[in-house]
Image 1: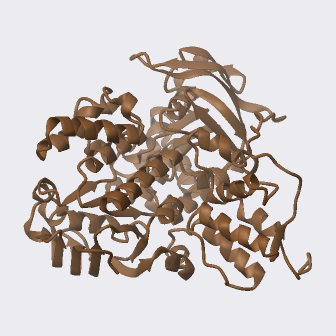
Image 2: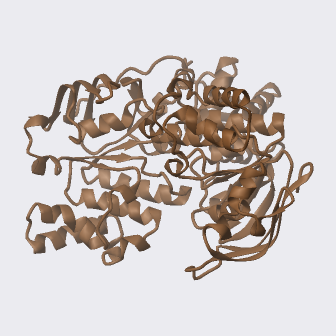
Image 3: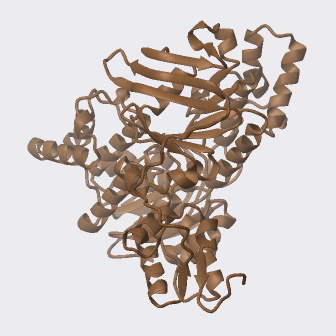
Length: 591
């Protein structure tokens, strides 16, 4: 299916990497028209990135591979045209999934200007485009900052800005919003949609599942890949009706699951699955107005009411008082933070990029001393705890496992810290295998780390710290780079481990993680804690959260729209409470 003039034509495309055992793409046929906004979905290893590399000419011109078939982009034979030639000709723009490899200038503004000037855009026009795009992406106040001083999400936004400023007819985006905060994701996707609709730019976006709700609410067409083959190509609503996403481990949008449950309760399929909270709210309003359903009212709940800081009667394992932290360049990242962490809980630490989440975790874990304030772990001042003891009380797992792993084999990586503590080798072996077994990966003990998948590397990074049996473990973006199924698998393991007494603090932009797996959610902004509470209560504060750059689950957004119009008396966060509150006309309450 195409819309407008055909810009991309792929015929019988098969790709096999030089060292690959199997084809990464097999007999792919695609036709993409002018002005389309396409989501390419699939689990890890399905061929999404290989497709982007092939369309952009990275394969075979930069990454050698065996390529069969034909690829034409804006009437150019990609197999005979280098990526540099494609971009210089204005045919295509590419955004890769690792922004640090795509930005290299000395200031944010210069990085956006670089591409514009190199393709011959006149200076005044280049300056105007750069300023406009930086303002749209909320980077204008950082225009003179060095890109390496930006947070990971800000770097991703800068990479997006550099390509969008060029306004090519086709933009390929490989997981472009993976590192953005929720509202940042929505802003980038909304801007892409605006460029798509107003300027006719064709956009192809890959997604593994973490942001499937947001991607599919904007895309008009979906292509699903599995084991290198196209298994679906069509309208997004048709895809949601099929059930492919759950079967392939990509994960179904929350509203799709909720509305399928609603249709089951009604015993009919008179309405289609909604892609966005606004469309879903219209359907609920229609059903209520027609008298077909109503909702049990458990008392009116004001979604704008701030949930107070939680008071817990349990003894905390960590207490922090009035923590401040100032970086050498003068940036004050933490400003009077106080909190408590309790044994055997999972806490999600959320907030916009640059809010202080990672800084707080590094300070609380002892990696950086606070500029002011006091941290107590099990009644002991963190400043007076020797380093070899501290790492066995609190520790940190980095966002990218490749930045943490350095041994050749898994066993030696997990054993490293224990050996540095001079433990007997018999004790080292015992604890290594205990830890690998806890994470259900003992069979990887003698595997080369270079041969591991991203998911396996993440587990090994956690194991290398978990082996020390810390009371508290901070994990930065645990599901980053994982598809939905692997992310769920990892979080299920962590949920089991909390019952062993471990406390996990997850720094995350994935709201599905926060509301589904957390015992508490903590929101940060500008170096302070704004709000905390259990997920079901926390995410009911939709208006407050959105005003602070947090996009709540789509079900909460939908029901908040209905609360504001007087159709509902409460905000729903989880599907079960939504479905259980529905009463169908003519069906008894116990039916």
